[in-house]
Amino acid sequence: MKIFFVFLVLVASLTACSEDKSLSVVVPADVKPEIKQVVEQAWPKVLAACPGFNLYASDLSFSGIEDNLSYAPDHIKRIEIKFRVAENSTRIPGSYRAFGHMCYFGISQDGSKLVISKDACASICAGAEVSASGNYKKSL
Image (tube, rainbow, N blue to C red):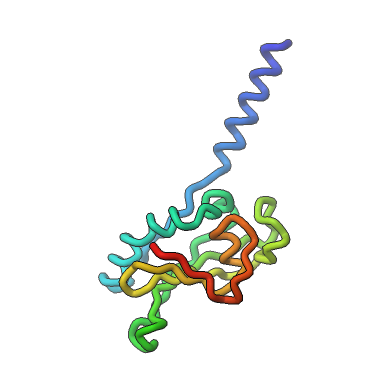
């Protein structure tokens, strides 16, 4: 009986671990080569800068890449990696007020900075509640 109980605990632990997924980005084929290069080089740095991505990956769905490089002033040019937050998350704390949000994780044109405009999305990145008034920035 004891062995059976240990076996059940082990199976439950492995099942819980297998629910975790890695947060990944798939660059669409129609993205300009210079955008693709910045995203592919910066994404591992974004993952390292955002410990919350490991915690909440199962509640985030990749939703595409946008850029404003052709029309925005130089100081705000960004490549936005978009993720949709699940409507009913069991992992993301309710205090983040992030459920259902579209989060834009902005990478500077040179790939050296991460800018997040919504506090809810910054909280997901940080893995802790953030109140940055739309100015959450991290060096990559």
